[in-house]
Amino acid sequence: MRAPGVLVTRVAAIDCGTNSIRLLIADGDADGGLVDVVREMRVVRLGQGVDRTGRLAPEALERTRVALADYAATIADRGARRVRMVATSATRDAANRADFIAMVHAELHAEPEVITGAEEAALSFAGAVAGLPGVNGPLLVADIGGGSTELVLGNGRLRSHSMDVGCVRMTERHLHEDPPTAKQIAATVDDLRAAIAAAQRDVPLDTAATFVGVAGTVTTIAAIALGLDRYDADVIHGSVISAEQVHDVTARLLGMTHEQRAALPVMHPGRVDVIGGGALVLRTLVEATGAAEVIASEHDILDGIALRLAAA
Figure (cartoon, one colour):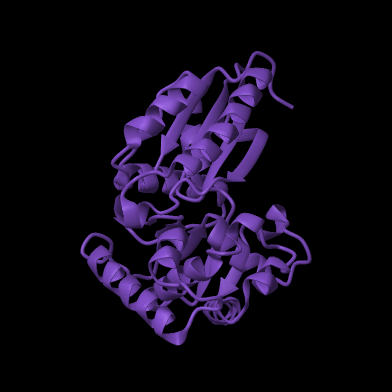
C-alpha cells in the first residue's frame, strides 16, 4: 500500500537488443524502486546477419516494427507518462541505422537512443544492483546479449567494457553445424578469450568480486541447472549456480540438436538456435575470472532504464 499523497510516476522502458525487444511499464515507488505493471519480451532477431553484412535486414526491421507497434499500444493503454527506448549492439554496428530510427519514430513517436557500450554497461549495472539488494561488496556484472557482452565492475566506482561477442554474433560467426563441431567450439573460445583479454585492460577480472550474470542466456542456463520443469523468474532470480554447473550445462547444450534444445521445458523458442553461443560466453568468462559461482539476476538494463526515468 502506498502512502497517501505519494506521487507515483508511471514510466515505460524499451530495450531493443540484437536478439530481443523488451518492454517494462512500471510505477516508481516512494523508496526509489519500481513496481512492475507490464513486462514483455519478443524475440525479433534485429541483429540477423549484421556481423556479416553490416546492415539491418529488411525482414528483421519489419519483425521489430510489428513488436514495437504492439508495445506502443500497450504504453498508451496503461498510461505511461515517460517513455525511453534504448537500442544497443546491432544498431550501433549497422550502416543503415537511420532506417531503424525512422521506423521507431513512426511507430513510437519518440527517438530511440542508440547508446554506447559504456552507457549500456552503466544501465545494466544499475538494474542488476537494484534487483539484488542482499548482495554486498564488489560486484562484477556480465550482461550477455545477442551482439555484445557488457562487463561492469562496481567497487566504489564503475569500470566497464563492451565486448563485441554475444549469443547471436558467436553463433553466426562460428557455430554453423548442429550440434557444432569441436573445431567450431574451439574457434569460438579463441575469439572469446581474445575479447576478454582486451576487456581486462579496462575491467580487472582477477578480483574477489561477486559474479552476477544477467539477461536471457544466464537465466536460461540457471533454469536448466536448477532442473526446473517450467521457466519461473521468481525461482531463477537470485539463484546461485556453481562454475561446475555452468560447465556441465554448456557441454550439454553444445551436444544437443536443435530439436533436443527446443524440447527443454525452460527454453524460449527464440533462444534455441543461439543458446550454445551464449553458454560459451558465460563459461569462458567464468573460467577467466576464476569465479566459483554465478548469481543469476532477472533484472538488467531494462530495469536500469526504467529506474533512471522514474528518478528524473
